[in-house]
Amino acid sequence: MIRSISGLTNITRNKAVRSLKFIISILVIAVILGVAFQYYQSLQETAPETPDQSYLEVKFFDLGQADCTLIRNGTHTMLIDTGANQTASKLVGILKSMEISSINVLVGTHPHEDHIGGMDAVIKQFKIETIYMPDVVTTTQTFSDVLDAIEAKALKITHPEAGTIFDFGSARCTVLAPNSTHYEDINNYSIVIKTDFGKNSFLFMGDAENTSELEMLSKKYDLKADVLKVGHHGSDSSTGTEFLKAVSPRYAVIFIGKDNDYGHPSAQTLQKLNDNNVIIFRTDLNGTVTVKSDGNDLTFTTDR
Image 1 (cartoon, rainbow, N blue to C red):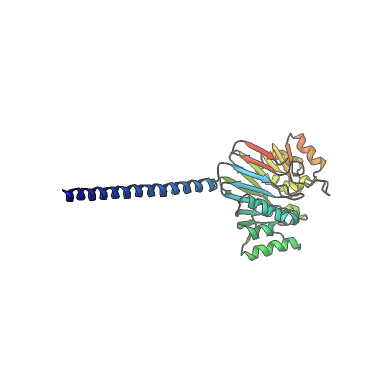
Image 2 (image 1 turned 135 degrees about the vertical axis):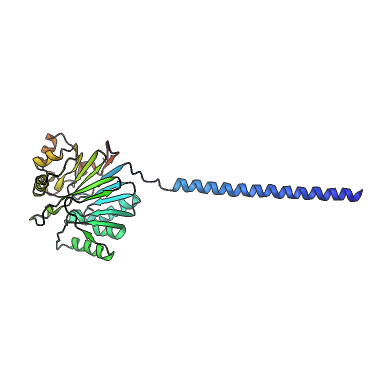
């Protein structure tokens, strides 16, 4: 009888041990699953959102008396001009703060310091896929610095011809200028790009002047655009009456430094824009101007 009780006791003890081990196993698994779930949630919370290709964002940076435009659509990034030498580090800092690591298309519209001053710094700091520059050279140190940066990373310059079309995410870009191989003024070598996104369009003029504008008109290009990046900082050498009529913009953006020495923008250009009921944004007054398009409507925000 004692053996039977002992045997039962051992059986009961073994069952209890097995049950305890089973419970412990379940608890361990639950803890592991809980930790894994929390880790997964933390990854979801910290992971960057997937870029939305249904929107096009254009930022006209306030870098003083200089041009610099950033265009983004989903993961695609294009930078048209890079400001001056003195704001190069500021531009790099802005782009990095936006978590930009690569630039699909880098455009130096023409080799003036207030347009390509920050280009060498951008090339050094970011991965660059395509570089567009016009087929013209200068003897300035700024231009030499850009060429050195391009050579150091074994990149090449593409001289786009007028009429060239390239896709940019969900947008389509058309090069409209330059249309000649020789100009007296370097400004007229400016690469002009029209970007179409849904029903919205943007025209980026660089410093193209009346000579280039007349060539575009004679080529009968489709110049119509909702947003005009006004040529040559609003100088009276650009934005001719017939050209403005062909573009027929609803909005205009002018890159200018406060109290600049050039008298930009000219009263004549401002009057033309006002006479055509164009809403004007100026980087000296509004700071950085951001335009967001969903393909139908445009939304503007400014720093000030």
